[in-house]
Length: 214
Image (cartoon, rainbow, N blue to C red):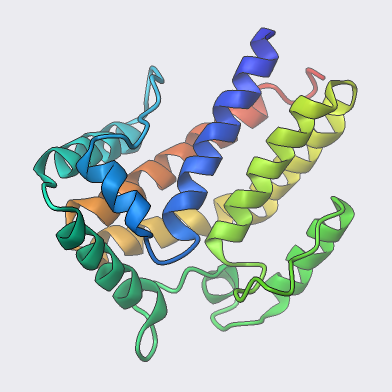
């Protein structure tokens, strides 16, 4: 594997890790991984301040987690309270809420056009709109995956990633992460908020640095 392929694989894995944290109510499998200290923490150096703090909090959470049922119940309750409600959730995980101040705003239409340009369409079975944070993280994961599969077209996929980062992720995800960090009392979602924010800023720097290299 070349250096560029290793770099893309690292980013692909980090986006997959974060996608898993947001895509649905935490499954029992995640609680088992946390209790058994099997959630993979990448050996990535140097880290920025947010990622360093986030991974340290995650390590402490795993070390303190002893009972799978208790952890699973707590994480499910927290996920529901934070992102689902009842009522208006304290941390709405949707781009349109942060950019437009309402659901299904103009930013969602722009987002759909960007997905269409990349040949992506949401499955009818997936209940959340396309501006849900997990969907956006999954899209970046997909672009990294496609760049690895089709190395001769890496420039195309790099351009798509830069555009998506600049036009979407960087505009709202850091603010979402700040709200998540302030709204949560346990170290788990505090850690995920810090890791997500730190990685988005780090990945923007990476994307900008390598612009035009392919």
